[in-house]
Each structure stands twice: as structure tokens, then as C-alpha cells.
Image (cartoon, rainbow, N blue to C red):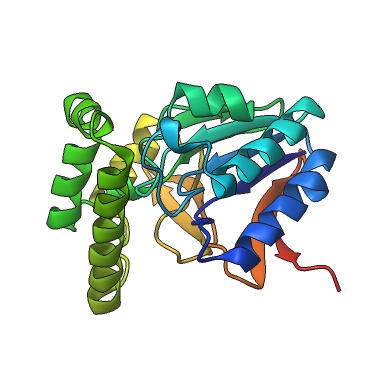
Length: 241
């Protein structure tokens, strides 16, 4: 069994979603062979040197405990936590994956992505993405003091929230999506980012391809997508009681 989640946006401002995820890691997730987190695990990540923050430390410890129990955990960067690095991965027991990543099982093949790289109609965001994914820009940012990075993260979060309130989340560009599905062998596509959970049917070159969009998590409800070796299905993650 393989589980997929995305867009948890964990932060001290989301205690409900954080509690759901910690309970998920301690329980439901351990019934699976693997868990794939397809970006935006955190609302913001300003560098692995901030992992000693008590909030971050609790999540790192929970991921490590789940990994030590035998759960394989793969993690893609999102547009909020693009600075997650090797020190975090080592401490948490997770594997940082390239975006996109092809996942082959005995029965099926999937291609996994956060999804934001295909939102080509949002020119402002694509320019921002190109900047923050640049290794030189990241190195320069990580050289700044933690306090300065915290302030910058808060400013970026406020700007992003204002943009989303004004225009909503931009969806994937249709032409780019077709090219992407073609380039990855028409594999079933699983992604997050848009906060528009759905199952889509695409016909590319006469071939039927499924696209599953993962749900974002909220204070009282999360969701995972479950592959049981035969089919995909959504499963709600709710607080106990």
C-alpha cells in the first residue's frame, strides 16, 4: 500500500492540521509500505538550520519515528518549502525526490509532482519560482541570519495569501500538461499545489491518462490518496472522536 499527501502547510498557525498529521504518522501511515509527500509539507521553511525550532523538531521527530518503524517516506519540494535540504532529510529519515519523479510498481506506473511547474499561465509566479529554485539565490538567502529569513518568509507568505485571495490558484496549463503526460509515458499523474482535489481523465495521442489532484489539509480534515495495488481511492483523515 502506498499513500500520497500534499499541501499540509504545517505551521504553528495550524495546530489542528499539525495534530492530524502527527496522528497520521503514528497510526494510519504505518500500515503502508511508503508515504509520498508531494510538496508544501510546511507553510514555510527558511533553512535546515531552523530545524531546532520546537515546532519543527516535533515534526522531524515524528517523521523519523515513522521511518524507523519501516515506512519509506519520499518528499518533493513545494512552493513554500523549497529550502528543505539534506540535513532535514537525514534527521527526518526521508528521501528528497526530484520533481517530477516516476514511481513504478509491479502493477502500475505513476508520475509525481508538486504541480506548480506546469502553472505556466501565471507569469508572475513562474518568474518567482525560477528565482527561488536558483541554487545561487538559495545559497545567498541561506547565508543571511535566521531572523532576517523569518521576516522574509512572513513577507512572502503575506504576498502569496493576498495574491490567492485576489485571483485564486492558477490551474495547470492544458498544452503543457499534455506535453508532460506524453513525455512521461502516459503514466497516471498525481500532484498537488492547486488545492482543487479531483480526478481528471485526459486523452493524449488517443491514450487515456488519469490525473489525480491531491487535497490540501485543513484544521479539522486532511486527506490521503491510497494505492492498494489495484486502484487509487481517497481517504479522509479526521481527528479522533
